[in-house]
Length: 434
Image (cartoon, rainbow, N blue to C red; front, top):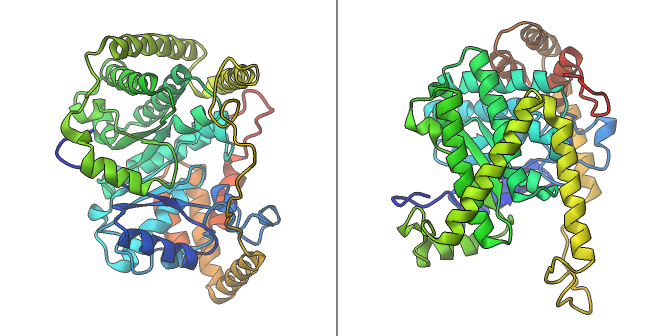
């Protein structure tokens, strides 16, 4: 919490085509949002172009379809990227979408030093809670480290990762597990970066986190406080961070994607920024904070004993599954009371107006993709993709050749296809891979 300024207010949005989503973003900016939050469709999230067989029926459904730099340019048409903060919920293909975003900013003539925003880029939680992974974990960590290194030089105001407890909690974890597994993943990212030779105090200030805001109010307050204590101690004692900014657990919390008006009322009327820790000192909050901190630290220790977060993917996933089962069982037998589910249930379901994506959206996206491929210099594209392949096989940073390939109108699926060929794909049923 900052006392001197309000938080960035975003509304998660993205659907159908880039043009439709662009219209939505411009409307939201006119309504007072101070930043954009982009939702991508599943094919974009897992690195398939809209004309791939695996994309059939999914194009533009749960987010916007992005196949190329031309789609990205339409998505941010008439939106000055050096004056708007953009958060992108993207993980396995985060490096590609970041490169596209930078490419559009360069087209606009924007200074990269003025770009601000966040890529989620938290692949480890995909293996344990969400599912949109592509490559084995070690390859994913190499990609993330390349992002840290390139952004430290070129995008100094960009948050290079949003280490996410939100999806872990949504998958059914407890509050303690949310803290422990999130920070364990954070430890893995910092360790991978320092092992690659990066200075912790150069990249750590741009790390960010993303937590769930659940319904047990005091427990959630204590959870956030415990996570901040733990992370500061981890960065100072485990990684030797000296910059105070490296110790800060900068995070946002989310309950739903449609709460813009509520945020504005809280910001303007509730006096919420009058104190950075308004409930600190109360016996219940302090006791819960200490309890969550102790139990989460113990759980992180168990992960350390297994070799860290990468080697503990199955362990964390199983613990989340057990917690989710226990939660639902308690609800079913009435031990846990949930308004609307097992108490004060409405006799009839309320009709909800659902956004349905026209099937013609997919056809149009596929046609635009075909036209792009027909008009580009294919020889140049192949040469640029070969440069990406060479970087993947070696130790050169992946972002420079990716910028060149995407600028030559290589597609998201084509760039991702090269990395699939070089890194392989993760099979969660095979133990020890990656």
